[in-house]
Length: 125
Image 1 (cartoon, rainbow, N blue to C red):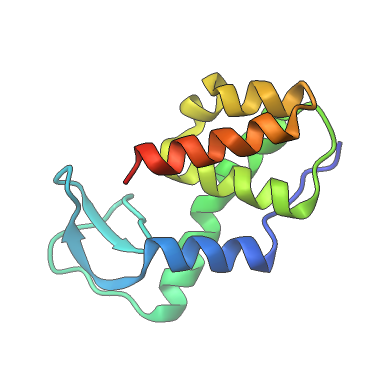
Image 2 (image 1 turned 45 degrees about the vertical axis):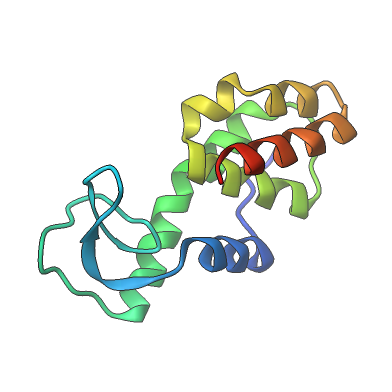
């Protein structure tokens, strides 16, 4: 299967949920963060442009795109691929790999997988 990339709709969804902050801040866990949730090499007082925030997000997403490409065994619509990238961006690659969501998706149970998205969004509120 070819290595897929997140689509514009998925990118827009992540940006909407994450929000963008151009000045570094400490998240609830005390980690320095900037842009759309970027945490690598961020320090107090750091500032970036909107363009840099977009670039950091695209770079950060490569890792999660790769995880979805690696762990999903069947074909995916662009929307489902985007949703899985967004999910793994939020919970991490390891959580995706162990998730019931992934198991159901790989088994072809799309209705069950959709319910897992709902379950996870309620748990994370």
